[in-house]
Structure formats: structure tokens, C-alpha cells
Length: 101
Image (cartoon, rainbow, N blue to C red):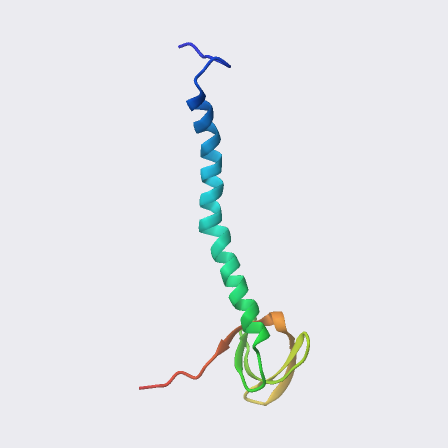
């Protein structure tokens, strides 16, 4: 078996360059782009929080928003109607009451 360095055809150089580009493009479309879309939707959800919304925190607590401040929300948590303050980034989802049929 003989190895050639420098005197090979240009097609081998092109394929060795195309493979890393293809891997990076695949990683972008499979990992980075969906994550950016999810992050944008979460940021929009946080900016649209208002009093009366029922939310779930990242720690699993469920409550109703009483007040929205700049970076803080005040939640009323049942059953004892406790008022708790959370940073907005701790809100993971806005939950709605499901209609039981």
C-alpha cells in the first residue's frame, strides 16, 4: 500500500473538508435550532405573565399569580393560601384548568 501526500487529486481534499461542515450543519439543525426556538417561546411566556394566571414553578409548586414585578412574581399557593415570591425564571409553565368531559 502506497500513501500519497500532496500529489493527490483535489476531490479527496474537498471531501475531507465537506465532512466536518456537514457534521456542524447537522448538529445545528438537530440540537441548536430547536433549543433556540424553545428558549424564545419560554421568554415570551415569561413576558406575558399576569395576575390571575395559574403557573407551575421549576420546583413543582403550583399557584396563582397575585402580583408581577420586574423580575419577581408573587404566588398564592394552596391549601393554606401562602404568598410566596419567586423570580420569574423559576416559572416553568402556565397551566390551565382542563375541561373534564
